[in-house]
Length: 126
Image 1: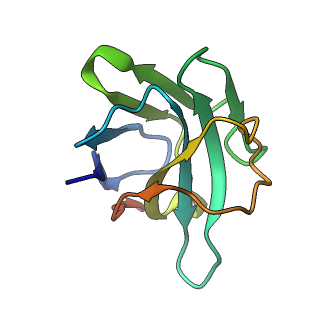
Image 2 (image 1 turned 180 degrees about the horizontal axis):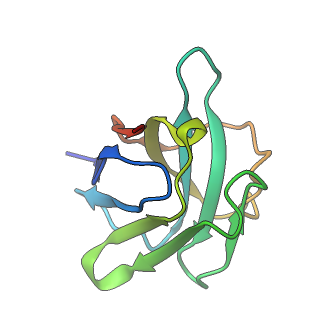
């Protein structure tokens, strides 16, 4: 059964760190571009990072640049999102999604994703 599974969310204080993971189940992530999205309470879902699995090329939204790092562990079929210096506005449900190569890992891409995870909740609060 094809699916993506996110893990690693939780409660963290401002300035703290979390590492999220996205793992493929039932298919290999290698042919895809993997994006992380988040949806804050009362806001629309936004793309915050992308990694092209074949090359390791990455992109980040301005809101997370310098604080978040996306990386792939291809042998484990896993993509990580290391989140440092977390802020309350980082709170939200974080999703990973896979799209076939060809979108250039653009964070402005509005086309369909082939697969979505169900999300993991990140809460940044003291």
